[in-house]
Length: 183
Length: 447
Image (cartoon, rainbow over all chains, first blue to last red; front, side, top):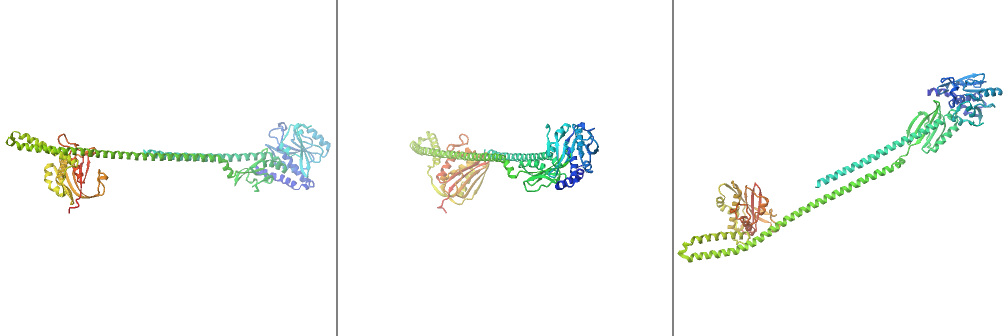
């Protein structure tokens, strides 16, 4: 199991290393930036706890859904193939509308209004919304680019409203955190 | 008395030795046990710290956040036991760490586990999130240097050393005490022996004084008595002459009185001999020849039941009263016969001897070294007890039945021998026989 993990994560982390090693080119090469973001999406999963109601059954996989445009170009599938959330597998779905059966939704909408309404639709649901950098909308997790590095903000209040909890370890790595209880 | 103390001493030494050994072994066991306990406790502590680090650093590993990882690692620098720490991702690349010792960490190649090195221990723990391994954490802790370890055990070492020392001192002092007691007891024994010897010497001296006094007294009396007897005897003779023919009527009375006077004179003679006041007529004589001359007389005297063996080897002459000497030999032969009522062998022996040490029972103060002729009369009779032997020369002491002995035979012999500058030695074993030896000084004038 360990050997397989190592082999499969070589690809994802290799890309990540590259992104870190060449921060100045991160913007210049969007495919590298999204490879990092795809790896991040799968890596968030072990640090997030969903309520049992979020899953159809105990064996149900953790679904990462891409709403709208897919900027990952197959990188996300690669990353998800090696990822695992406890006993659950990780799958990638593409959806046309906000889907509450997803556990993680990447809002790839260029239309701001549509993105906003989609975020609104998933508010209060046990779904982690992830917004891309350079977008005004904010999800539970929002990618940002800081110092040429891919970072992320976390809105723990929103996560709490959806009945989810995010590990403090992840919160500790976030660029900015909106703490629980804040308006 | 000395044996038990010395055995007790060696026993107690063994006991103290065993106690010291037990104390030492117990000290070593406790030290080793404490050492192991401490060592395992230290490893456990470091392992726990590694686990805590591994659990908290997973996100930093996954998201390759080196700064966050370094923050977690830096928190561990507060622990002086930790020499180095490293956080590695799944590829074995180091994300964060520190190293105070200058040595590079071996990295996560060994996998999870504990590896002991020279003065340090590497503890590797796998970091996993939700059951998935994400990387490894390695901590290197300094194992305690030997000096510090010894310092930690100093108290115990001191205690054990002092205990052992105390036991040693106690055992030594006890041994010294036992030795002193032994010395004391041996000194006491010597003192008792000396006291006993002194008592014997005093006894002998008193006895000798008594003999001297008795001799002087009886000698004086006997001398006067002898003169009186001579007066009575002379008057009896005059009376017989005066009576003439009429003497026949009273002759038996006079004869009987005369005989009694003879016996009385004989008795006083013996007493005089004992008190060494008898008039002696010394002549040069060879004892061997004398023994041959009176051989027939002795044979008649002792009777047929006794076999007489003579070994006459003496050739030197002596100076003595011949009549008295004959008397002495006869007397000794008669004593020997009386000691062998069933008959037996009587040995008369003469030999020349040179004495440099006093014979047994002869005081050193009265002994003159020189050449002597020894005359021995041996019997294989009843022998004497030690007590009887010591009192044998006392006047009027006899073991013979009433009326058989006067108790003056040996006293007279002793007196005569001493008056002639000789020595009398009595050796006797009860049931085996008696040997009486007379040493007479050699007559240098004779050829």
